[in-house]
Length: 178
Image (tube, rainbow, N blue to C red; front, side):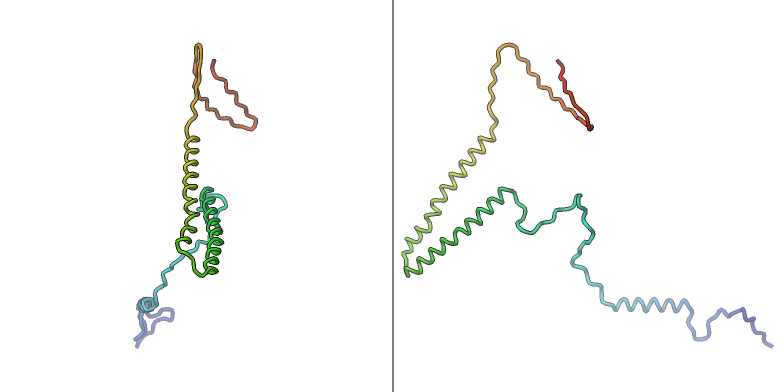
């Protein structure tokens, strides 16, 4: 006679033809790996935008503003001068084209002399202006000549006093030794 186990004892071996839990987990891992291999790769990002707010004061880089780019005052003045000269040349070219159209034919030599005259006058004027400006800068950059004439005993005191005054109602009294 065969005795059956008590109901609270369960068999430890799987039923015939059924996989073990470890084998099921291994097969699930294999299936996941195959599915991952068959998926298309993630696209490589070509740009990134940082949405974190920039502090109002700090070491953040400057952001270019709309309009003209930042320039020195001298570069701005030169830019305005070039734009003005370019705009001023439009009426001159238009008048020249109108004259040639009305005349029907024109002497090329006379046209060349007429077109070169403003340039021939502008080059010496610009050269003289540049020469005067450089001479003025040279004179301003040179240190002034100081002539001091003394009679009798002369004592030159060349001391430097560096002080720091701090506080709301602070006062500094610099008294040099006698």
